[in-house]
Length: 213
Image (cartoon, rainbow, N blue to C red; front, side):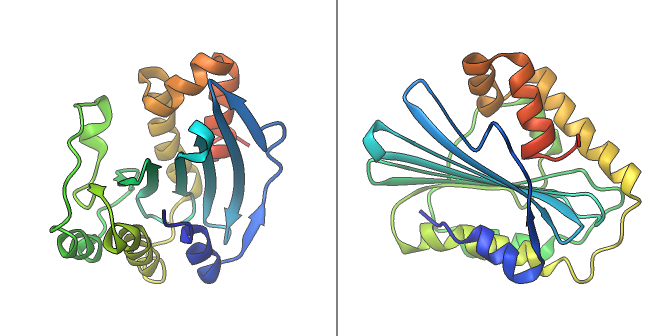
């Protein structure tokens, strides 16, 4: 599984680690999690959540970048390695204040079109997903390379990106996060079932997406 996305972000802007107490490590239902959350270059909340289960035979990594001072889409990467098979979810959510040229991301998506697509069930957030979203399943070096290629293309948008009005941008981010809390999703549903509503909402607002200080 690709584990270098945080390093790619660190090469572009400074990472300032946040205190995530008491969520540094937590466990439930045979799953063991580790969480780190950062302020990335005074322009985004960057979080990294890893999970292992089944004696290490199943591993998952999530990286979320939620820009608050740059008008870029919210970026989310999930990589799952289970019994030798890799599944990659690369998602871009429309938290934009104004349209942005995402053609570099589309170019990466198209360059990996030979990889097998992952079929997803319909979800309430489908309308918020932007066209570069990519979902793949398989094995091999190209599956491993895909997340870094897409993350690098996303990071290449930063130098020319517009500065965002921070209150307006945070409000757009919050609209998505609050909808996620209200309508649910695979990750928040699992955390909610293990630790309850209040804990799940704090984890998502404060540490994963940074919409609440």
